[in-house]
Amino acid sequence: MFEFQGIANIEFEFPKVVRTVLFIHCGLVKSSDEKEYYEVVGRLYESDNPQETGENHIGKVYIWVHDHPHATRFQTSCECFEWHSNGSFEVITKDGSQKRITPPSSG
Image 1 (cartoon, rainbow, N blue to C red):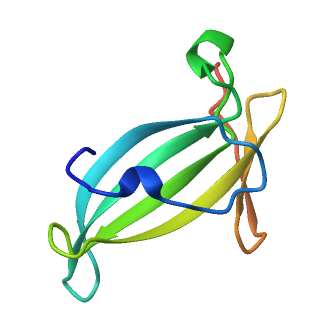
Image 2 (image 1 turned 180 degrees about the vertical axis):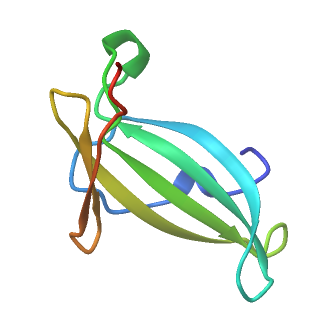
């Protein structure tokens, strides 16, 4: 993460207040046109200390890092999560489409 100069200043639109971003993944990706870029994924939380509160993340931010290490360019996308009491949640994309994720039944 520290090698991506400027990543701390990334701006993105999200419909809720975000106080914590926990980065969970960073990897090199190759696009369909054979160009390589890094993908950085962060979980978004409303609280300052989600580990202490046990809060579910309210979404994810995807940051694509192009042209690294020279003239680095960032591109972002977000998903918003709406959690349900049964452990399932809705993934809502910027265009408003929704997909329900249901945990496997334990039995």
